[in-house]
Image 1 (cartoon, rainbow, N blue to C red):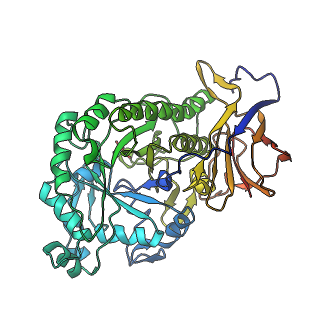
Image 2: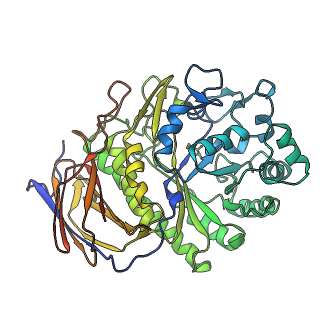
Image 3: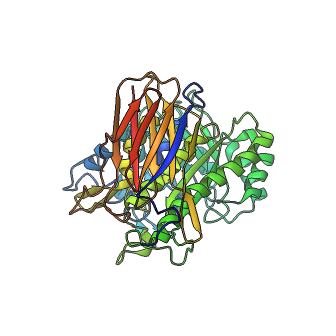
Length: 504
Ligand code: AHR
């Protein structure tokens, strides 16, 4: 293992000041959102097994997966894609399942999609998990009429053709459609459009996304890929307040090359630091896109919706390259935690983020193999960090060393702090150094809390991961390596760890 530049001591140290007297913006719960696409075994096998499966299910949806997801207080779920959304025709996914037409999923493995999981099944899944739906519409290969009728089908309570079709298919009352995306990656798989052309298309399609039954559907426009600042400029100029949110997609590729992205479980320390640096790239992207948005929207009324993010590695050996099935290590848990610190720091602009994806695809929470299920290290970060949802973020100042491998360097330490409605304070900390523990002195100004509790996520190796045979290699443990002295709290973070402390 390579040695970092500041590695002559056994421990590193840092200083954290939490400005508890100055609570800032509310952390939008939807930044802890997720994404489920018709891709590989995310929907089929991962979430949907069908009513006749021997795997315990409720109306075809896996009970074990729903039970695990419920523990995350999942605020929002995006569906049906991704690239799949712009070739999905919703009418093929309603009515008796045996009569639904099949299609080819051209983006993801060219497999036959039987449309057994459609609109009714998606809203049932959301109701079972207890989460808000975010449906992405088809601009790339669908018509305006098709999109208009889908929204009517989902949300109208009138004696109208689409509402009556929904009733005929077994659902009397409309569902609540909280978020609606007008196309996905319209600059790429969603239609290879130029920003000006998409902006006009957005204006046209969005005109027919009506608000029925007193609902206001939060409209999300396709935003930029990574650093495509021209896209953001154009959308802000040509679309502006016609959208409630503008999406941003950015994936972390460990090697930096799409051709050979790197293994999910066998990687060097250089790949480890390069992967974690993805969170700092995300910070830069949000900062710069937000600055462009500020020019015409200084009040930050239009939200940035990071509706695809996460680490994208090579697929597991022997699996279909079109299914994007990858393992998930302690490294990826740290990456998730660092992303949450970034999203929370930008709570005034970032209103939602959806990790890609929920089950069996990319940086998943859950992996399944027939009846078996395992929770990934990333799942545990979502579970540990749920305390921040809806809390107010505190400004912080953090000083600490750089963690350097070769020409890559990132801050060794990262933190975020918030106060929830019950006045509990939550401090989350990451020590990215893979070898040395970190002594962090936290100055907690104006914090009267008496009781402190904590949990830690770490393991023997940065590559550590959970398998069906060994599901608890990386799982949260109680944490008490801290000492309080008045306004000072000294915390000893293990190497390569995530810690969440609660003060009440
Ligand atoms: O999440 C996998 C794919 O990545 C999505 O379908 C697409 O939107 C993005 O390119």
